[in-house]
Length: 277
Image 1: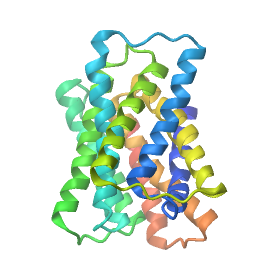
Image 2 (image 1 turned 30 degrees about the horizontal axis):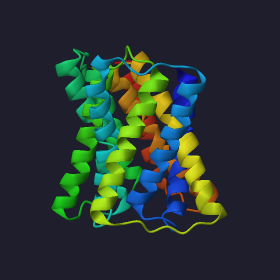
Image 3 (image 1 turned 90 degrees about the horizontal axis):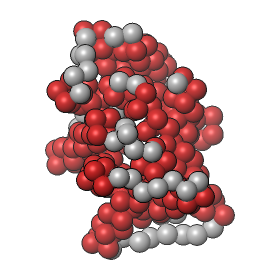
């Protein structure tokens, strides 16, 4: 379990660097569509090679729901909110997801919401604020949009935990991504945003996002949701921004401040506290 979580955090964390590079070559929503189209194509190919059957009929409403929420809406809402919000505030709002998962999991999955778990969430979110150097100002519409992305992501995680864990994980992830890619394609048609610049580096960004940050990472995420409490898996994902910041320091020459270091410690302290809750 620890190895799966560590690999997930490394893949999604380093993707912060890849996404920054990709922003120079693609419009955000078009890049998201390319990313999940590539990821779904890889996983669908795996299901064909391994002869994994289609999910049973009873799973499809929830596959469509989670694909439209976790893959499509979350990405589209976050990219839109970034137009008027600082990256730190947008990321901070997006990673309030564990709070909503903890609440929804208590209501719909009867997961225990202990004082230790609540304290761990508060500690990690506070550390994330320091880590990302969040400024509280911003357009309220964009703030609510970013928060809605976190809530919808949380709802998708809880639905997946409660309704989809009997489904083959490879098939589940493949079809979630396919649904998400289709929704994003429709969204791009609606907004007419297809900017792209193709070269070796931009293709490498698509390859990393499609194969590793999408196909492999989302498969790992489904695995973690299946084998952990949804709330514990969600709070553990707060290690992703930490890896992202460290990756930016190592590969992009970004600076590390004392406040960021303290934020990292608080995030990990909160994760440890939550796992014991």
